[in-house]
Image (cartoon, rainbow, N blue to C red; front, top):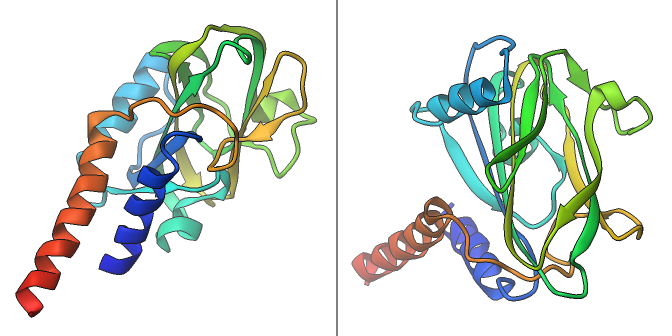
Length: 211
């Protein structure tokens, strides 16, 4: 386990200058549909304080679920994904953003702390963006050069299907957020840095004690 955490931390640090950093968190939650984007963020953030909370850094935001990443439950799950990325002058402009999710009790999506939208209906994209009601899709989103953060939160009753998040810059083809997305890395949230530093520190301490 310590080796896996070290690998995750080393990967994120090594790729920091050339890619997004994606923090994926889950926890147990029996909460139902919410009435606003702010309510979803509040409920999911609260769930992350539970003892069931798990967090890691992803290399690619595709096929992501509580079970696939952590081997966890497929029911009563709260999700929080935080994508920290930077935009160069060449890529600044009008973007399209989309996320295919499995949020049985709905969810919300935020860019730089501002809600892009939320849905309180049963969302399951099933690997296709054809039905706009089953995913988050936004076009003509103005994104300037500099540091940005995309946050996706949601609630699931059953059955924890694989999710995805993508972007398209200035009319280009969609790309999945990940280690090879070509975006400039911004400094991650303190929580992500703590995760990485803690993983490295714990591993080093364990190694010293064994000698």
